[in-house]
Amino acid sequence: MLGAVAAAVALLAASPVQGSLFGPVVSTKGTTFTITTSLSPNGKSIVSAGAARITEQATAPRSALKVGACVMANGSKNSKGVVAALRISISAPVKGSCTGGFAFARGGANRPPRTGTPPPGGFRRPGNFGFAFGQVTKLSGSTLTVKGTDLRTKKAATTTVSFSSKTTLSETKTVDASAVQTKTCAFVRGTSTDKGETVKATDVALTPERNGSCATGFRRPGS
Image (cartoon, rainbow, N blue to C red; front, top):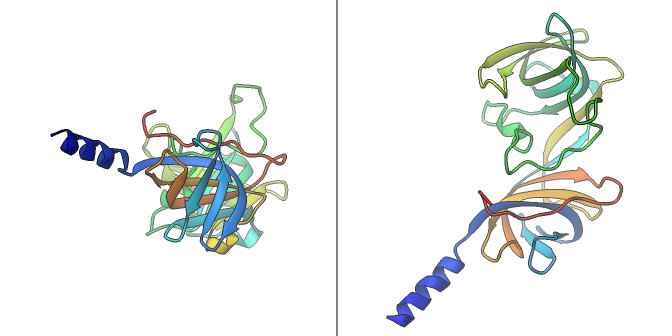
């Protein structure tokens, strides 16, 4: 009886746990890489990314803004509801949907830390803060028509977005494991049987280090 209980406990302990972690890449070998993380029992995590979907953020050319592309824009909104974009992140649709392309930007426990300069106003968004998320249905000069879902109300929304030469354009691209290099930050979503010491990744998002560092952590969902 005690043997059966011990076996059951051992099996439960070895069951994969879903979670996420974020930290600097310190070494790579083939499709496996190591990041440092303060919440791993030994201070680091060895990530197997051979079967993972890997994306990276890079500066995007003006030509990346086109009908059919998925965009996430933020800036200021005028009285007519037009968003003058300070930043636009661009992604290709995944299975015809724009939500998959921004899996790490939709909020929740599996979101990486924000990067870049936050909107002015300390801890509060300005009253004219504007945001648009969805698929580009029309492009005319320096104006986009974006059809998607309001992330706060969860209702369908169509937003007009204007941009200029001062708008920062970035693009999320799908890459292979060779793109994982040291001195980059990796946000990893996957499963682990040892509290994050080793992780089998399902998704990896790469971003540049900011001031030479990245935040870290591996969490059990709900914890």
